Image 1 (cartoon, rainbow, N blue to C red):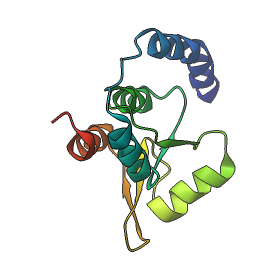
Image 2 (image 1 turned 45 degrees about the vertical axis):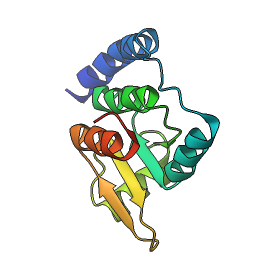
Image 3 (image 1 turned 180 degrees about the horizontal axis):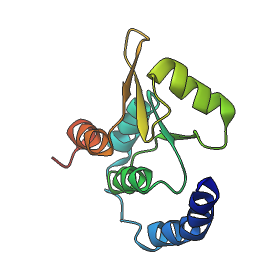
Length: 126
């Protein structure tokens, strides 16, 4: 059964990545100062993700729409990122947005629809 899902992922993964690339949305155009301010705010964010996860792709597409430069952390092939996600976030589930708060603590947001709603609220496009 495990082999079946690995094979399925191996076949569908490249198709999902091609679809993501072909349907890339055009990003929001901002004046330089505003984009610089947004980029500074994005430094407090990191998206833990798997490259071919459909929910992660959905979040990455929204990041492109909003022109957000959020650090992507591979939790599938990078053991340190997976361990941080498990130990600090509480679950190895992706996508997960780590939000570093002003006091240095972190908030871990797990659902793609919640992540997208948060990004839209913080960075435009209600």
